[in-house]
Length: 345
Ligand SMILES: Cc1ncc(COP(=O)(O)O)c(C=O)c1O
Image (cartoon, rainbow, N blue to C red; front, top):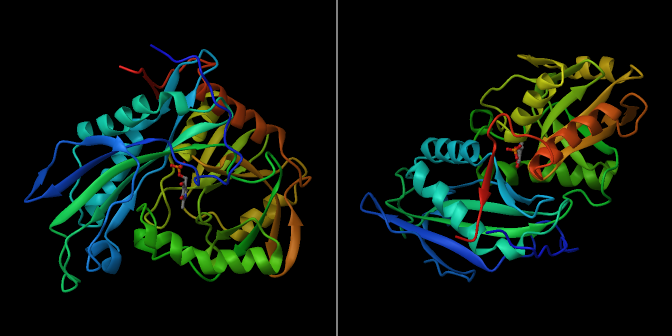
């Protein structure tokens, strides 16, 4: 059964308003508890809790969209569950069984169906896994207890101002994070990118930093990077240094479906980008669950501003963005089986 109500997306900043229900499952002695649904409320942690000292945490970010037909569908749940399990494994946290994590996400969406905003809003879902053993001596051992939970947040646009061309500052010295952990969705990675990002915002008026240590392009603090023109979509090939975005994979797949030539380069360089940006039909974009597909209009390199193509929001970026958002809301077929409809049960 679907619900007819569709609240508007909140005006509050992305992720700062929460849906009513969460689901929680503890892990200890090698066993997961039965997940419990309940109201979103604070939980208490001992001051010695592992995650607070040794960073034993990973999370996911995915969305449930309300279709134009009123049906709520979760986008690419399998891919997000897979990535969370990879993150947990790399961080020596207990790996949640795929069926359990899948069920937890779907149960929260079902409990919050009335709270899923109409498009372009959506319900952002945040599965989180933390090490909870109270032991400040456990620096070199994994946590023997953990907590897995899923919260949800009705959201609108991630970038204030709607669809507008973003300004990216290029950081050619520092990586976003410790390179071999870039593919892990862990809080520590985000806090490492924060200093350079804040400085670029304040000093250069940039929206984001594109990390390209040694001149090799990685990604921004919260999205993957793509170069687009009327015939091509070009992006760095997957490696350990950056997050393997589900939106990146979705855009590349849709681009190939639409006849673009998809080029995943082992080394995409800042020189390649500068050369690219000088062509009139060049476009660039950021892909991510939160960012969707956001156009990049300007680059800042060594204090100089360069327009990407004409510096506006490119037609091909908009075309690919629409292919993705039409799929989200059930306006087009789902040939790749990416959508999971959710009913109130
Ligand atoms: C660092 C980083 N890179 C890339 C992405 C894009 O990933 P996805 O498309 O799976 O949301 C995100 C998204 O949250 C991110 O935080």
